[in-house]
Amino acid sequence: MSTPIDWDAVRAVVWKNVTAVKRSKAVVLPMLLLPAVMLLGLPIVIGILAAGSAPMNVGSLLNGVPSNLADPIVSLPERQQAVVLVLGYLIAPLFLIIPLMVSAVLAADAFAGEKERRTIETLLHLPISNRDLYLAKLLSAFLPAVAVSWVGFACYLVVGNASAWPVMHRLFLPTWLWTAVILWLSPAVAAFGLGIMVRVSARARTSQEANQLGGTVILPLVLAIVAQTSVLLLAELWVTLVIGAVVWAVAIALNVRGARRFARDTLATKL
Amino acid sequence: MADVAISTDGLTRVFGTQVALSALSIEVPRGEVLALLGPNGAGKTTTVRLLNAVLAPDAGSMRVLGIDPLVDPDELRRHTGVLTEHAGLDDRLTATENLLAVARIRGMDTAVARRRIGELLERFGMSARADQRVAGASTGQRKRIALARSLLHDPEVLFLDEPTSGLDPAAIRDVVAMIDSLAAEQGRTVILCTHFLGEADELADRMAMLHHGHLEAFGRPAELAAQLWNGIPATLEVGGIDLPAAADLVLSIRGVLDVTLDGASLALSIVDREVLARAVSELVRAGADVFAARPETHTLSDVYFEVERRRADDGTTAMGSAVNAGAADAGTASGMRPISPAPPPPPPPPAPRSPETQAQP
Image (cartoon, rainbow over all chains, first blue to last red; front, side, top):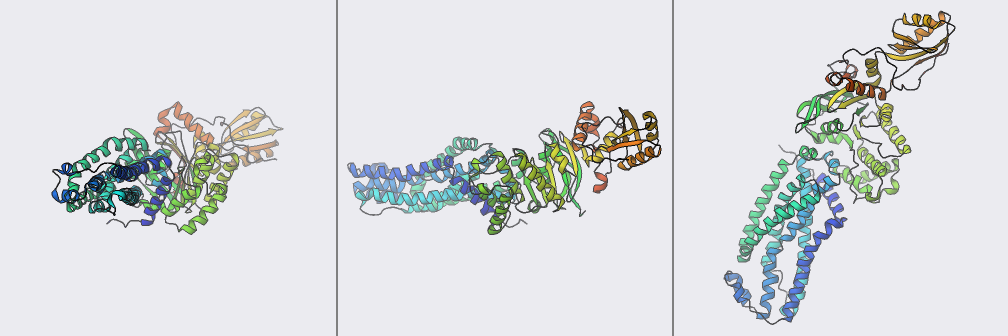
């Protein structure tokens, strides 16, 4: 029978990691740069372009897109069609890069970074089980990744609605698609990426090595999957929910397996 | 056994093809300081990691405070404290934050932990740095903060890997006194990995010498010395008697193993210090003047270098049959395994410790 999780110890490790990461410019800057460009810069540019350019009918772009998505957009005034299509739908799948990237950066810091700083051995000598240590490291990356996603999205709502106001004259964000992506799919993608990245990070000797492995192998792979499923995401809300459920299932399986295989001995052997 | 803090039996760990620790069998009673000695790569850190359940052995068994580290590793770690070779502090956190994180992982109440952290940082002269990030701290300061961290929960067994490296002389004196007090007054068991033999000599009740993972010597330094040199060296300064006659007289006393003339003195090898008193008594009775009688103690350093020397001279001797003088009184069943072949007659000891006593007629 497995022992209950020692949440005090898990919280302590998460607190230590998050406190340290918040003070590390090398970790925080790359983590915030992409969300800032995507969630603040992009809606501003789209809003400005939409307000300043001639009306554009996007009907031809939506050929092949399911009618339940295309019809509400095409039925809008022409000036609003591009804004709603881009800010309301097309950016949503791309948004998934953010939780993935943030969690990858933090996971690299969580294990490989600790090895690099020679702080991991101290942790291994403490009374925290392998499973709880894995869970703590997972949450140390997962919680900030979700927090950055949600706070970023809140900013996106404000900036998107504000920049499109001259064209839209109403609040049009969030759409149902966005809501499902943010609340359901985005945390699932973060957990999925972590299931892979924590293992990569545990095997890498430095956070740079972990980031390189993650950046060159893991992220492109997941991005390809995201790109392939983008059209699916745009189809129906229930499809997004089902995709989210599948990603959650894979993520949970990966992490349960990761926690079971996580061993102090393996980590200590590489110190 | 209740009074045994650590026992290992055939403890072995292999990394790939490299044997990091080979069949280590030792017992350390509670309240003692064991100096774990040996060159880099000897297996000292591997031993500490095995005993604290960070590594798993490939063979053998062990008990620490009666706990099998393989069965209940977290329970064991609740009672042990470890100072790793590298201080292992997160530069981005303050000293207090580094210690607080560990205290919370150990389940300490935050208010209690803060009070304890304050006390320990003050004890190690780190109060001024308590709320500063570790990034700007010197090696010695880091070591002191890490030492405070290892003592947070008042551990019953303390593993200290190079506790004084990087410290200034005053801090070394304080840390040595602290370790001594932990063992002698508070009954804590300390495993001290160090390259500083003087420090080990001052603190250690027993020594374990490792080389390439093999135990080469284990026991109390004095007992090991008695095995290595076949007796305790002593010097007698005499007058009023013909020296060769005095030598013959002393050699006839029971317990005197050897006597040689050393200028105006007699160099003795005796089985224990009481023999020296008998020698003085016999010489005085024979009309001699005894100006000084000095039993000389082989230090831990002497033992260390002698074992090293013998291994270098004949590698199989030391490595194949460890000098083991700690087993009998530590309660192990294995008994003593004296070094073989039999050691030569007592050579002049390498840099013996200063005379402890001086007897005057």
